[in-house]
Image (tube, rainbow, N blue to C red; front, top):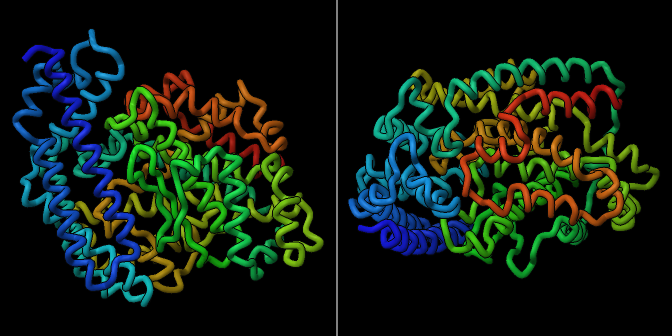
Length: 503
């Protein structure tokens, strides 16, 4: 088949797969509200869709098209004469085809159905604070993930096969090296902060009306540039962002955490993801596989940049604190903006990852990374997971876990079968700090935030990152944006400047 005809056919298949993924997104969104007896059929629906999508990707036709377009190991993007958009689509499908053709359709369907049912089991186990409810299905999921890793294949470590799904081109050895340096940096900074005076943040745990919290969160999303004609917000047991269409991007939060700022920062975090999805779906990429992030770590770089580097900054609250205080005058009586900023940036080890401060957050990820590797290797049984979790929490963070709900059951990822995902959160911090360092060389971030007009930041991110979607591999895109490969020193310097030198 001639190159032009092969490319046209690939784009037809791509469009169909994207539409199917958006239909699957609708089912996933509805999963939060499905009646208990509806779980079974919902899982079957999702399994059937996943199977159909797998068969399209893993087909002989797909392999022939990619071959006609010049894609191969070492040249995943195909013919160099093609433009970046076409090479990006080819690269994404070559990677998928090479991986998915190693899985049987029946296995794909079983995996999808199992994880579809597991979500509600996890919700119940978490609600009842009882890991034993979740243990059988998690044991089955881990077994399936082990089978998947073996089918995908790997050179050095079975974890490589899973990590590459979420962070293309990054190996377990690279993550281990980065985390080794980051762990030492975090523990050193944590020790230095421990010597600082105590910060009173008790006012954050007073009673704050949810409707007013929601009103304020909407104002923040407005300032970030969230497009309400293309997105909406909802509630979930575990906050997430999902695309149900090219112009239908939805985010969720929860109002069950004790601190008033936890739902807000959750909203900002998911808003960062949504901005990426909105920016990645544009005239060049809309309706294609390119209309998403370069990788999950790149996606996390945007969500955590907005949540922490912007949302917890002094400039941000110089603009927003008067509005926040006007909504909650009683709770914030006698609280100054300086005191408020210090309180929301308080560094103190805690049990819950999504509520962790910027310094200890990475230690939560290292814990999960280490446990996942043991589960995959078979050196840790699922039944022993709570004990291993609690032991590592005490070793890394000095925390005695109260119960499984705030321990091993706090995250939804394992119910989804997404072992290999967690490292991308900490990698996202590293990406984000390096990107912010470059951004600050071109935009006066503090002045922009104080003004309340965040458009210069959003436009810079859009022009340098968001508009490309997944057109380029993550390492290549980071090099294009910052002029350097990933380096832990940017995150270390950011934390040192914020938490050690300025306090």
